[in-house]
Length: 96
Image (tube, rainbow, N blue to C red; front, side, top):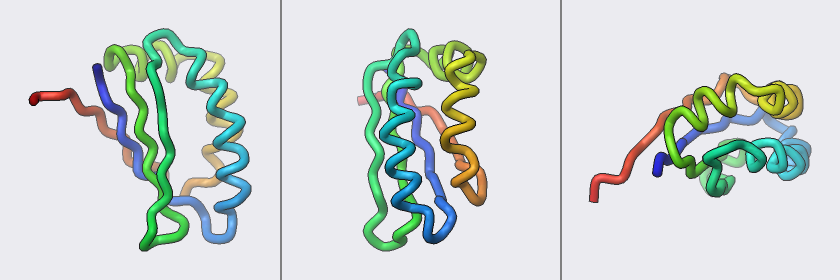
């Protein structure tokens, strides 16, 4: 299992619209092969900062199956205009 971690900085004042659109966009990511689950968490100290955690079966399920899909284009159109700067995305595997 691979954990995708994305730090999301949403433009000030657009947090509620982002949260609404993110909820709708969940249908896109959850339709991809190898997807297990995702959660979006809001930072308590910085009101426009979020962390996205996505569990994938393999790295390629995210980097190939999702990012090279038509579904990703819908995800991108729905969400990417909210970010400034563009998110940092990293992948982690469980060691212990």
